[in-house]
Length: 290
Image (cartoon, rainbow, N blue to C red; front, side, top):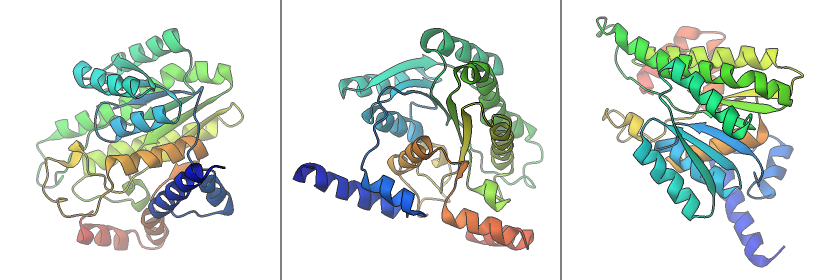
């Protein structure tokens, strides 16, 4: 190994270890191997034109993957794909409105027709709404909107691709959910939390059904990430948060390791506490304001 490559590997390992301390010897060895090569893999990524999705599209392309990038807005999506291409990567833009199940099904058919079943599907597109359910009882449409994009859209896309994935004997579905799924409570995020919990439950059930088919499902829940999604509220201006690039590293880990779930350590700890006292967790989360 050259000195330059060795230095790059050391820096990569140090940064990754700070973001996600290794839990096992196998994880440490994977870190020491340096950046992962995804050459030859086709990755379908939704919500790819901004925030975590845009950062992930660039990262996955740099690792050698062919990225099928999906978003609603053609102009920003094209800009993302052009930037990836100019940097030497491969990205194909596909426009779709995943809040419309019919359009999600159309997208699945187009992907299969043009590229065949993807090696990886990352359901990253989503909508977050921070409002108290108690104070907004007249806003039922908030629940309809979040369920449409965060649950029904991804499910329609998965179901459209699943038979081809199973026939191919391979496939990995990554559902971007939320750390609150493990905690069980996210005060002021009832609409958002319910939609992501539904997607997480679907993912766990599907993973069990696909045992032995070569298709696996990962639920990935991030800590707070500073993206345009949280911009409308000032409540998190001073809160610690990941950058989009750091969150993209979580998605890379999900793609490489294919775990059943990937959550921050504190979220897993809250789940353990909640097994004995759910309301203690509710009070803690409400007090901290996360």
